[in-house]
Image 1 (tube, each protein chain N blue to C red):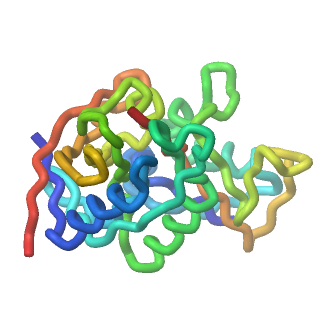
Image 2: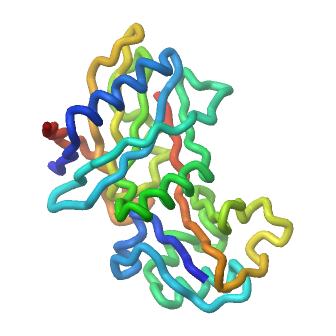
Length: 146
Length: 91
């Protein structure tokens, strides 16, 4: 099982974002370094949810916003390690939509259940597989550090 | 020109986060990139040779899909092409 390592502050930030946007889904990018067995995340960058037509159960990050996030990450010597989003009043498990729309192989997808406006369970899933046709989500261990 | 390669595709580009290619158009740049790293081809293109639907191409800050000449848009050495897979989902 792979590992997603991040600080308690970043973990809290991700969960707080889900509470702020409730009952809509929040989303953002995770920046960090690749390490043996997973990612070490050093920053979470909140992004806008462009799915204003169905923001309670869908999210999308505008590609141009992602281009700018990646540009900033590169300038700091960081990689896009993954993404996070919330599931308002829905379990912190990946959905068929999450799977169909997941294309960043090797990256982490963090999902937080926000129940009645409060962050509940947070899980992370590693998008494994060597190609789009072979991809699969594997739950990974979240390791919090000070 | 410079091509930025996203995290998931670097493994197919000898671990590199960017590549410098000589190209006259966006299409030329993609051809040069995939000639340099053939394994990238199937991740960027369908078997019919079209850019995969979830792969976004940005020439500097412009979505190539919406440029008048699309992939035939002329590029210069100073331009940067970003390859950005889409990110979306929901419960």
